Image (cartoon, rainbow, N blue to C red; front, side, top):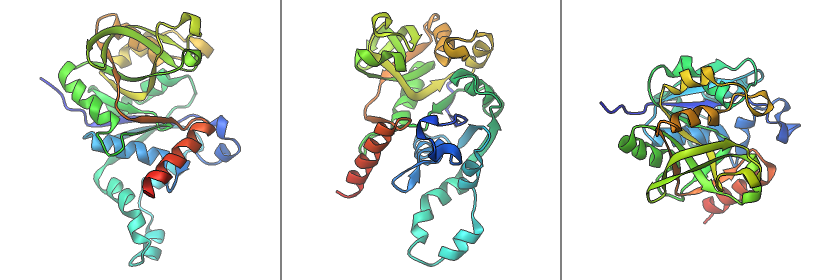
Amino acid sequence: MKKTIKKCLFPAAGYGTRFLPATKAIPKEMLPVLTKPLLQYGVEEARKAGMDTMAIVTGRGKRAIEDHFDRSYELEHQIDGTSKEVLMTEIRDIVKNCTISYTRQVEMKGLGHAILTGQTLIGDEPFGVILADDLCDNDGGEPVLSQMVKLYDKYQCSIVAVEEIPLKNTNKYGVVAGEVIEDGVLRVTDMVEKPEPEDAPSNLAIIGRYILTPDIFDIIKEIKPGKGGEIQITDALLEQAKQGRVIAYKFKGKRFDCGSVDGFVEATNYFYAKDNL
């Protein structure tokens, strides 16, 4: 029986060191592009994909995330009936209509470990994963995660979103290779974490959108630490890929690497221009 995807996991425990000193006291996921924090963009994308349960993996110093996705009675009282009230419409809607729960990643051991930490919130069902510092937009079209949910309905296996990158940048990403099974969709046969250009199996880089089947948790538990002593989600996905159970999807839309200053500025300029057409 096909299972619908109702939960989305947000790994949000990282330090955001590329944005110091701003991220000394502010979670990088709460950095705003225009007037909305990165994490809220991600939650809104998950909701448009039909998910109403948000599982957020946090760490020390991340209380601002919990406060953002909560009622603020004093603020709401102050702006009640004023022109500013409309600015709270989207976040009020999220708080009212979503279940948002949290768990802490006590040690920073990589994305695979962060996803495993979220098992207690996800349980035994397929789920989405959004990395909030990869901000995606399809210019009024279908959001990336919604595109991937349709693919999941068809293939019932784990899915990674990929985009073509310059070969010189492969050492910054997980990189996949595979066999084309339909336009823009590959059955993954190989997956390498941050390979040097001469060792990369392709120039298709994984970006921060996944749909994962729940057996991924048991696989992660068996994975040995990889580069930098971290538990890599790519290593776990490779085990699934060996059984033909991972596809890569060349998504439609734009993606901004808001984990870098250049990408963050690019995203800000893009959304500003879009809002002021």
